[in-house]
Length: 202
Image 1 (cartoon, rainbow, N blue to C red):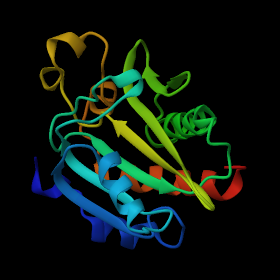
Image 2: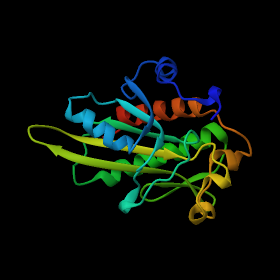
Image 3: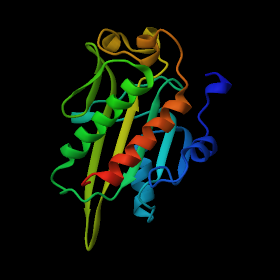
């Protein structure tokens, strides 16, 4: 990983400016899953809007028990703590809205045609470039909680994917045919998620 491309919580926080999402940012070199870390923080009373990034996840999760595979330092893997208004039984709505935000951000930042494969996958052409995982839990006598996990393949090359995934996965760098500034894209994503959280019914 190039030093210039290392993600910095301080830099992201400074460039984000005011907003609920990303009011506090934590950067980890490695963890099992950023969703797991955020759930632990939620138990300790962490506020909505806290974001945890990891350069590498050893047990990243996808939908239906799938593993989210990502080479260290090449993608974006992060989770956001929310206290949404939507029903605890309907996390699909939040997953769909977030997946659309990811696709729209890819389109606006890189002029790539990104599409959502419902409910939570983002594709460029016939290959998956990103995914969203929403986990929700009820709380007695308190607003329920949601952890929004997002994984985006950013600077991976074909050899960074397992043989099993190589034919059906892609990255922004592959699609753009050049390296991507992960920090700038992370900031754009967090700003758009903040707008979604402020302006929608979630």
